[in-house]
Length: 157
Image (cartoon, rainbow, N blue to C red; front, side):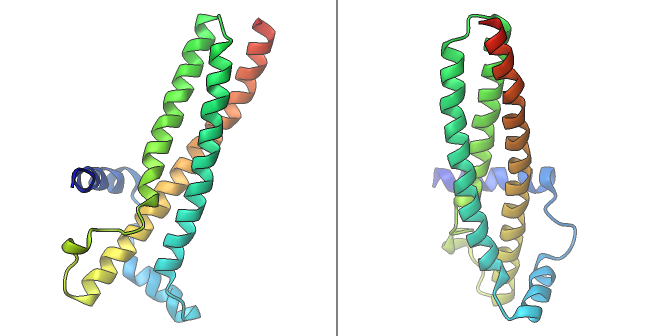
């Protein structure tokens, strides 16, 4: 119940911040399905789930790397930089966990109308896609930034 409340309060913020699409989500997926006769909503949800799992694995490895680097640094500047990067990775992981909730909206909240259910599913898929893409870009930047940090650490120590 608490998790449902967190998602209900987090989703409007993510939708506003990420703006997953300015077009009708159902029209987007209906157009894809008419071309290939595949339910692209569920295909996208499965794909995003798998990709998010891989990115979370990368983030976990980066936690270990940052922890190892931070334990051997005496320079206060590098400690602050590594701590900030660690916090950014934690934020990325927390937001990315939103992409792994494959059940979508709780079943008790689903409307009876098939069209409305499809609208909810399509909007959910586009939101997760937007979350994944933004977090992927952030993690890429954080990982690239770690290269000069390791170089500086080697020069300082």
